[in-house]
Image (cartoon, rainbow, N blue to C red; front, top):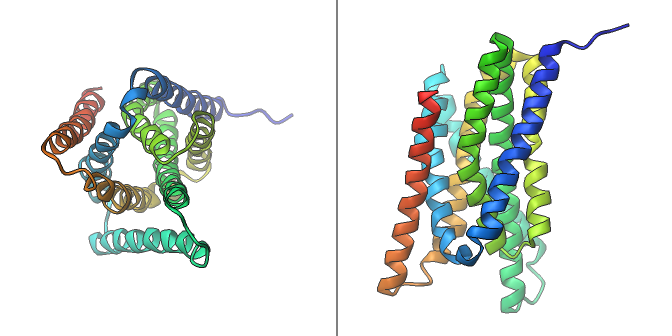
Length: 258
């Protein structure tokens, strides 16, 4: 009778529980305390996505990379790839007469798709990192999982806010984010069976995740903010963008401190 390695059980359990816990905490915040602020929280999401990309994902990728040129080319390919992905979504509706409501729904579907793809990449990498920690030491794996959950919550809040703003129902936003969070389980299992190869690929996956977040912030969210240009709106937008950046900075300090 074949026995399952306890380390693999720890990895699978940690990725499932960690992903579900971060998603549920973020959903609780998004659907209750922050629900009346969905429109303003798009600015918060911009800050979170840009800060997570430039202060966490990209620095981590470049620290691990052996070939900076290849990593930069991957970032460029990622941006172009997400541009083409959005173009493909637009092409489907090219011959359809779009009224204003239909146009908003189409834009929402594109934004939702991009945020799910980017978050899926990020969660996959988290799973690989959790696997590496558990394979080194069980206590380190538990600590790493807790740290990742704490780091993921603010980003998940931003994701929920984007999906709600794009017209997703609460139920659909939960289901979509749950599916994305389960990518950490796939990353954990792959990391366990092919850790060396997965570690070599981590910088490139991190860069692709960062590319998707940057593209979403710049191409889909910031143009929406530009539609409101009175002094009060600009102040509110900058306040929430700053809050998003500060949230990532604080969570990063906690992550490195543990």
